[in-house]
Length: 361
Image 1 (cartoon, rainbow, N blue to C red):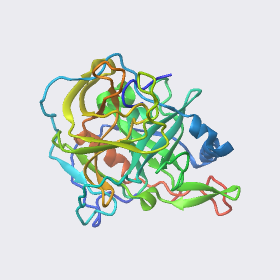
Image 2: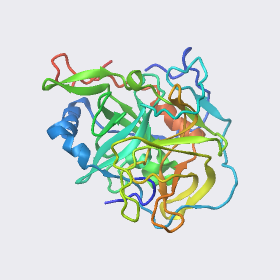
Image 3: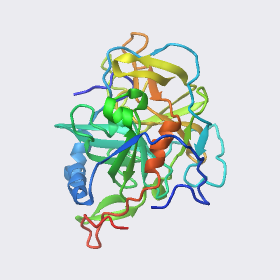
Image 4: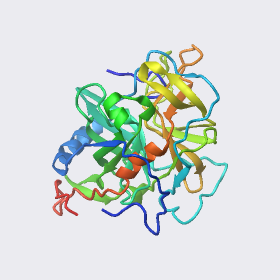
C-alpha cells in the first residue's frame, strides 16, 4: 500500500459564451475508460451501501518517495507558449471579484476509488468544460501506477463532501485523460488528470435520482497555464493522514485550505519530479489532487486552477508535514485538458430509477 509521505496521497469548447485561448500544442494526452453506464450501478452501490461504510474506510492515497522534495533554485519555468486562461463556469463574460474573506469553494470535493484490495481517497475539483462535466485531479488519483491496469476502479467524485455526506450527489467517472508521459512512464512532472463524469446521482426511495450536471450544481473553476510562478495561490483539499509524529490533525471529513506564493523548481528524483512548484502547507495524505487556484474570489468562490497537489512532506525533520508540490501547468497540460473539455457524458438513470441508460446523445 502506498502512503503519502507528503502533505498529501460533440460541441467544441470554443463558443460565443466560452472564449478559450487557441493553442497549437502537440497531442500529448492519453485516455482510458473508468466506468460504463452498466458498471455504474455496482460502483454506486459499493460506495453507498451500509450507510457509506466504504467511504469512511477509504485510506488517503499518494505517491511514495524516498526523500523530501527540495527547492533547488529560484529560476522560472520554461513555459512552452503564451500564458492562457479559461474562465470559470459563470465567468465567461465577466471578471472575478476579490475579498479578504475566505469562503470555501463547493466545487472541490473528495475522490474515492479502488486499487487492488484497497479503498482510497484523494481530492479534486470541478473545472470548466463544454458540458459542465469535468473534474481536475492528480494523475495518480485516476491512473493505476501500481499494476498493469490503466486506471483505478470504482472511481467517484463527491463535491462538497462533508462528514460523510454528499450534498450535491455522487458523480461516477466516465473517462480519464492524462499526459502520455505520466500514464506510460509515471513522470510525476505530469501528475495531473482530467476526468469526465456522468450526471450526479443520489439514492431515492430504494432507486436512483439524477441530480443533473456537475457544473450546474457546484460551478467549475477556470483553468490557467504557462503562468509565472509566485502569484498568490489558494490550495484546497481533504487531508486525512496523520503527520509523521502520529498526530491526526485532520479527519478527511471537511475541506481545508492553504495560502501562499509558490516557488519553483522543486526536485525529488526518486519519483521523477524535477519541475514542480512548491508551497508551504501542513496538509497531509488525502490532499492529493486538490486544486491550486490563482486569482481566487471568495465572493464568487472561483478562480483559475493552475496546479494540483502531487507531493509534499516534512522538510525540517520534526515529523510534521510542511510542504506540498504541484506539476507546472504548461501548454501540454492545456492540450490534455482540451482533449477532455468538449466531451459529453450525460445521464445514466432510466425513467424507472434504475441505471444503465444508453450513452447515445
